[in-house]
Image (cartoon, rainbow, N blue to C red; front, top):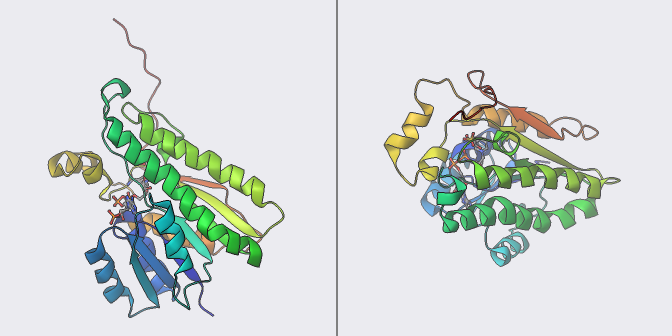
Length: 251
Ligand code: NDP
Ligand code: 8X3
């Protein structure tokens, strides 16, 4: 019998690449995001390969998340894997100049949205004693950079929540993995810079960065390891990315 995966934020980047790889491998895929037209296109494209169910879903709305899970159609109710991928960074300003609304959106999406989705699927996973929660963290949760302030902190939350969740799930066969990619070429920068295409393209210029497909392949491998194996954390960067030295400001 085909397995079922729920991917949040499937309309772009990592989420869309995950939708492709799992669908091509005959998984039932549940794809969500806020952009309806993109979901419809995905359904058309991937419906040739596997069963696809799409639904508009803003992960920030706890009651919508709960209702969405409760109302899943027959054939998609038994979720084997949740990929908590929906997320974003807004702005790159220092804390003292940052926009409070941007912080709210990042916290509501990257932290609270991930919590709502996790809680909604977990009860059933625990009951059937199998399942896998794959969280999309970031190198930004491990390594600070100027302007990363709240975004990086939301991803540190994802890291520690993933570990604490594992602790809660000990004794069950439900697995938890935090994938921590470094810089990858998606719509991430376009969103961060609020539609400024030039600024976004500059981030990825002349660099052989991670592609969404690279991360999707890693996720596919992680969930297809034997059930006795739990990859706790997987940090991955493009070969062209590494750490710099600690800086000293000399006046
Ligand atoms: P994209 O901007 O390409 O994709 C983000 C996805 O998240 C979109 O499908 C978007 O869909 C969805 N999304 C955003 N807000 C919401 C919301 N409130 N409710 C539901 N869906 C939402 O970026 P990436 O693919 O790069 O980002 C995916 C994840 O990977 C994020 O969590 C990001 O933080 C993380 N990440 C990204 C890295 C990078 O360098 N690109 C590196 C490390 C981690 P829609 O707008 O249709 O709702
Ligand atoms: C996205 C990676 O380094 O642009 O999580 O913050 S980075």
